[in-house]
Image 1: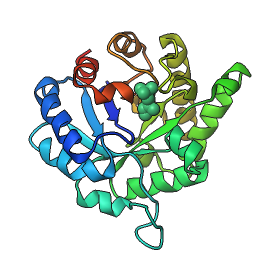
Image 2: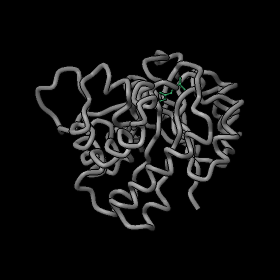
Image 3: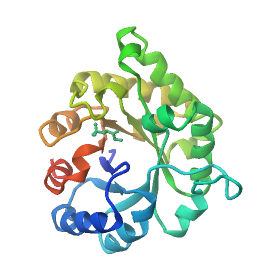
Image 4: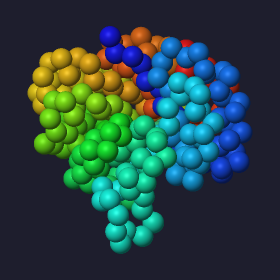
Length: 248
Ligand SMILES: O=C(CO)COP(=O)(O)O
């Protein structure tokens, strides 16, 4: 059985003080969640958020990392630096990073390898644009992103990962993919993993859906056989909404 995993990607929101307030309010509401819960604040808030969830089952993730250990990469943060904070997850290849920060399939693959080497669990984001979907290219785009992200990984490594399917046209737009469409793409992703790793790994890998996930659509999404969780943006910034999603 795949244990569902629901992660909040706060993106570039919440100062340290705002992060602390949000987590303090959230903890009592999500501490008995039956799913794995991961909070992904900005780098600056990681330490405080980690401290606040210390005695709970809530895990913490970063939104990005560099693939090098250290060096002349102004403005970047390495996986080793994240490890020092004892955080568990790292989002890699979010569409906003691909769109605005020159993230490519190749850098995603390098970051995934580095994260695994450090025992950080990568949440690898893939997804098509509206134009690609309308041209009938969703399957080829998404599966090629998965193939590139997982290039040269062993079965054992692939077994550690989480993959998030986030159709770009559904992010922050209020448009959700229908749960059937989202499930279909997640099944394509699972098929691709089955080609790259053994069947047991493909059956057990957790695949999230992301894109305008809200309290009123989470249940239907989670009922789909290939959707094992959600990567939540806007609604993860609101205590009532995120707790309702986690306790769907
Ligand atoms: O990009 C997302 C999560 O990574 C989704 O964002 P929204 O939930 O705001 O659409």
